[in-house]
Length: 254
Image 1 (cartoon, rainbow, N blue to C red):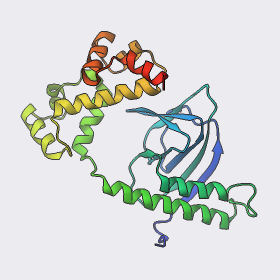
Image 2: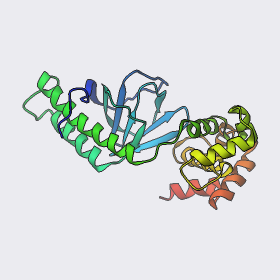
Image 3: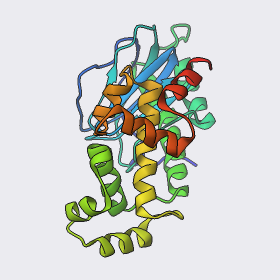
């Protein structure tokens, strides 16, 4: 299906690079980072993650983010553009996204007989980018989105870490415990209660820190507001069956 002019993205910048922005920032336009080689580590206010070769990250407007420096070499392809679509942050290794990005790489190859910086070249890049965004928009509609209420709970847990419990969360959201539990059960897509939901978020955060962060276990425990490394280790082992140290050793062994 042909993109309407209203749905076509307006390309502001594109290019390959190996030195992404290391300072936290946000902007009024969309951005896509496509990891070409090595490993690119991204960070938002709530999570740290790694992009391997072939992975992409769609960064919507006003999302504060930056990248962490790495001693290993890496290369990426970056796009900055305006778009009338409303899209959430998305990252992964989608074969359709990879197809469109590979076509764009072909267009900007020096071996091509025209420049992607001409009006015609820019239009071709925007056309491929539009197809990519149309695919992401359709894919994001297939997955139930979290309600603003559930997202607020997730954000609070990500910010406060282990310091959060059901009572403090209810107080923060100006609800009683019963109101909080009732509304969570009504709005959350999944078969879990709020206590387990909090623990799932904490385990997910711990996993990301253990996988991608250079912090040691004491620093991770402090970052996540555990009172001690021992409390952190006991919590993680109770939820996953292995200690944080065992998990890191497992990752190191591949």
